[in-house]
Image (cartoon, rainbow, N blue to C red; front, side):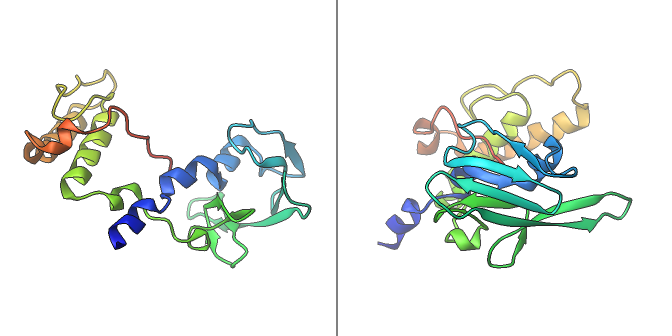
Length: 192
């Protein structure tokens, strides 16, 4: 019974499709100065009516709520200059991402502490997932079935050799296993 409850829980990868990431906002220039109102694409945040950003506060207006959620932003100095932004959840935690859940944006523990996708899998399935992600770094192909992709023009030979060794080490126990026969053609990319 415990096994089914683990498989039904939402994963961090599923929640990351609809999260508020301070690193993305910082790169987009939303946290530069005064109040900035962005109209983000509907597919990114479908339940958000309006978002306003300033250097120290984010106001999120959701479609189904009257009260605007206010997310404080703090900054920590970096060792070699500059500063790194952080979002603060309602519980007081300082985090880089807030996930959509329960009528607002909250940190991972407040959303029920979702598990990672790899935690749902057994040892061979985790090895398959790692091999798949290593092959994505080389340009992408399916583990065990397809040959290892050729080295890209800008990749160093040492890096390519290290990735090939890792792929070979991960795929060796997978040869002829049931995991390879029943594996999906596409695995959702990491969104960290």
